[in-house]
Length: 118
Image 1 (cartoon, helix red, strand yellow):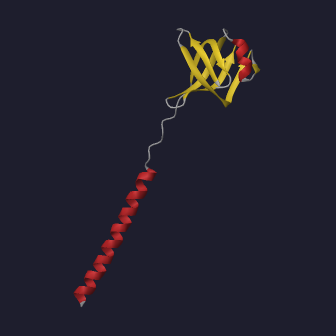
Image 2: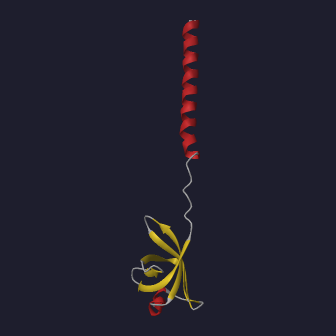
């Protein structure tokens, strides 16, 4: 009888230890998830080529002549000649010098944070 009782208690203890360690292992990876690398802002200066208002896209030719597309969002700050402006107002500024601060993103494309036409 003592042997049976001892085996029962030992089995319960091992089961408890096994469940506890399994739960601890499951919780640990969640706490150790690596943080996504922060995307650093970049700035491009060039010439405003095209504004596609309905697609919310601005195309800027860099100093090397290569065109770069930038997506404009509601959070994008736009200035023309030092004054706050809307995306549609950029259409009249094609061919002018422009500076775009943006977040380069692989999936979403270049997201414009601020656009300033001199």
